Length: 139
Image 1 (cartoon, helix red, strand yellow):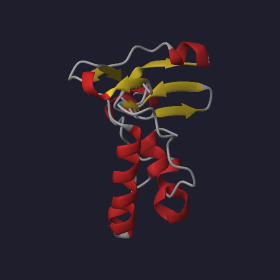
Image 2 (cartoon, one colour):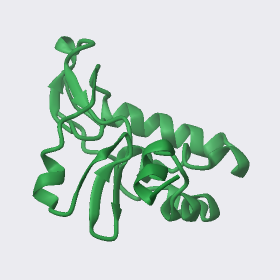
Image 3 (spheres, helix red, strand yellow):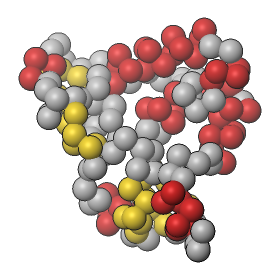
């Protein structure tokens, strides 16, 4: 490795302080508020970089452009875990990083329910970042 940027590029899913904190404290992994229910036939997407309200009937494999990684705010640098080469100091520029993946929208409310179910039945060893509802929901 020549630099931190090289390490981050090669290890974009490396553990972070927030992931370690979530593993150590089960209470942080359980949110107090559920996502808002949308109008019938509509849902809010839980994919990072999307978060759009979509019509469930028109959800296709090309409907959503998103980032599969979580946002990383380290020092003054802002980037997506999946796109380490696109790091910015300005938040406005970070928000303009183009999504790197296309797929179906993911219903935020259904995703939330699945994560709560997993968290309620998983052991502490299984929880890790997967059971961190806040991290998985993108906040």
